[in-house]
Length: 421
Image 1: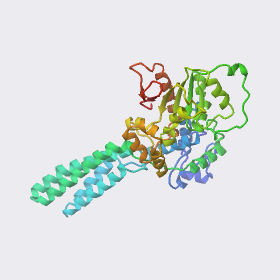
Image 2: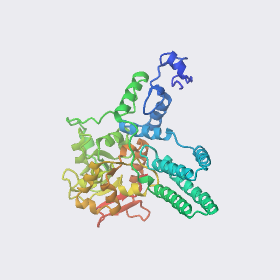
Image 3: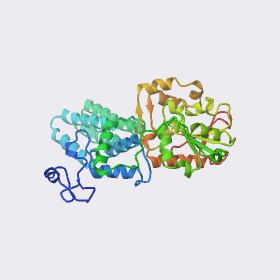
Image 4: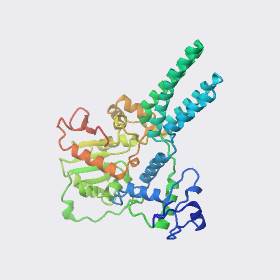
C-alpha cells in the first residue's frame, strides 16, 4: 500500500514491523486492509474517493453521498469472473465429466445457476450483472450447438429434448435478465456507521475534510437582513424535499451562480425562510424548480407546493419538476442505485388521487413495488449539472425543442423534465 504522504510503497511486513507506519516518512496509515472483514480499503483508495466526489476539493458533499460513492467504487473493485477464466473451467469440467453422460448436464446446470444468481445479485453493480446475463446466453448457445450434435450422434431423443430445453432456458434467462438489470434493487455493502468510523479515523490522522457537510443546522432565531435587500425578489426558486440537498446547493453557491433562492419544503434555512418567501411572492413571473428523491414523499413535493397555503396555493406560478421521477428512471439507460422497502410501497399506495393521476400506470407500479432512489446517490457535480440544465431548458416553455413535458390541462399546472441528466 502506497503512503499518501510520500508515495512509498509499503508491503504488509513493512507496515507490520513499523507499527502501521510508512517505512520512509513514518506517516501513520489510517487503514489496514488485511485486518478488515467484509470490505477492504486502502489509504490511497479513500483519498482518491474524497478527491473525486468533491471534484478535487472544489465541491461540498454530504456524508450520505460519500456512502453511496464508496459503495459504488467498492462494487467496481469486487471480484468479477473473467471471460477467459470461467470459460476455461467450463470447458475443463465438461470434458472431465464427459465419460458419464449426466456429468456435463450437471456442470451446465451449475454454471447456469451461478450466472443467474450473479445477474440478479444486489451486491454487484450493473456491469457485473450484465456480464453474467450475457454469459448465460453464451452457455445457452454452446449447449444447443454442441449438445444437439452429441444427441444426434448418440441417436438419443430424450437427450436431444433435454439439451434443447436447457439451452433455450439459459438463453431465455440471460435475455430476460439483460432487460431488467436497470430496474433491479441494490443493498449497501457498507453502513453509514461504518463510513462514519472511517471518516473519524481518517480525520484523526490526516486532518479535517473541509468539504464534507455537517447535519443541516436549523436555527430558530431569524437572521437580520438589510431592508434594501428585502425590497428585491428572485426570478427563480429551487425547492428541495430535504434540508440536506438544500444545504448542499447553498454550500456550493448554486444560488449565487444561478441567481435563485433555495429552500427546502421542511423550511430550511429556517433563519431566513419567512423573509425569503415574502420576497418571492412579490414576483408574479416567478418560476419554481422542484428537485427531490424518487419516493412517495418526493413525488408529492409539487402537489404540496400547489396546495399548501404556506407556499403557492391558488397561485398561477410555473412549477418545473426537475426530478427525480419514476419516468426518468424507467427511461434512463444508466443504472441508478434503486432500493426498496415495504414502507415505501405502503406510502405509494396512499398517495392522493391528484398525484396518482399525474403518473402513468408503469410509474405507479414502480412506486407501489416499494422502489425508491435518493438524490444523495448522485454526486454533487451531477446534481448541480442536472439542475442547471433543467433551468436552462425552461427558458422557453413554449418551444418545440423544450425538454419539458406539460402535465395537466393548463399551462399553469406542472412541467416535468423528461431526463435526469
